[in-house]
Length: 109
Image (cartoon, rainbow, N blue to C red; front, side, top):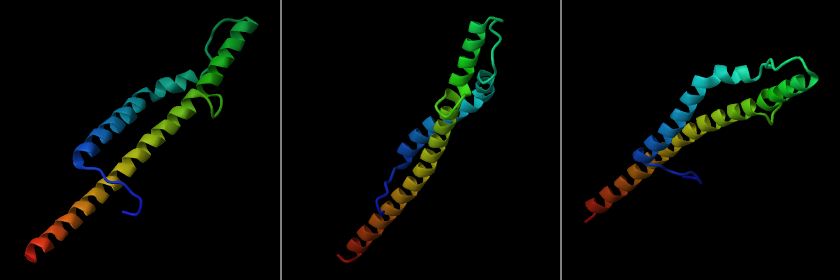
């Protein structure tokens, strides 16, 4: 398997379900996350303006803010799903190789 890993169908199903639930949940709140990047109306004072700007920065102001990191997390879950598909393929190949070996052993008796 060249340093890879394998997973059976039951494990794949459980991990895939978690990934799908997170991805689907995120897709359901994307608009609300965009709204966080809008500057809220908090009043006309300088302090209110500073707080509003701070809120925008925390939500989506740079690569350390909430929205970009949630997007990275989504990509991570998508990569996990891809890795799980490869792991399942490795598991099937390993199962097949073992089955062939046992079949040969049984045939040589």
